[in-house]
Image 1 (spheres, rainbow, N blue to C red):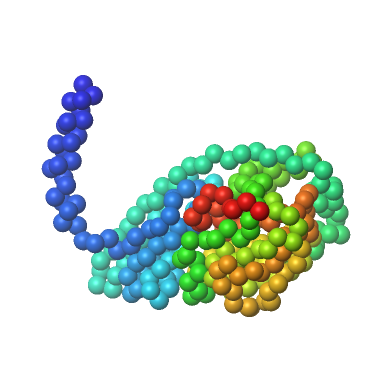
Image 2 (tube, rainbow, N blue to C red):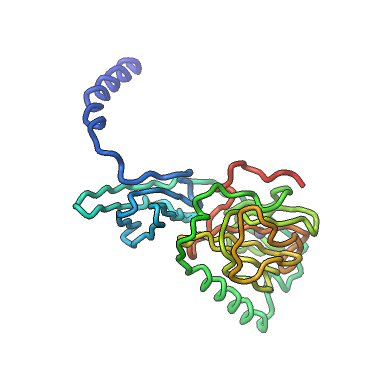
Length: 278
Ligand SMILES: [Zn+2]
């Protein structure tokens, strides 16, 4: 029976194939995986207009675009491309589900898990400055490249894991931790411009780099920052050194990826699953 059904399906496929073969060239192409928490990039005609879930999506001059799939998104995303003369194409993108780990960390000073009330206003102001910088929608093109791991070391924390700090359940971990000795060079993951540097209570010495179209990467807990605000950086350029400033139990880089206010998994935008060892 199974064989027969396969044959039947094959025959059906043959009868419908010519219709697909006559279809016009697709209006857009997508690159990268479509897993939850992934940055997706794509290309379309430079004169097309794009929308994602009914919100406009900006295009670079060569027709490149980017968007994120939220880490917990299950409903399909609706991407629509339209050309001036009325041709349009729509695609429903179903997020590929992921299973996230649980990670328990102990030994943190309790003031970093339940900050004292007088620190909360500072934490809120620092988060607001980051949120403001992440609103940038610039025509930079760095987002189109395959990202470089920013530091040589060992992954000690993965994206999306449910965090239990000193026994208290916290928000999921929205980045990748790379453990490396203090002072290890940190390199920009892609071309971009520094959109924010600040010394934070939780993040320590933080650098945010804008790669265009709302895509940014962030580098936390640095020993020191070697770039200035608004400075242009090239992929691979040294931008800082690994430290343990802010909420950290040892020297490591917390590396994050954002599409506007959405936090994504930077390890899904690199060529290799792990960084080179330190
Ligand atoms: Zn982290």
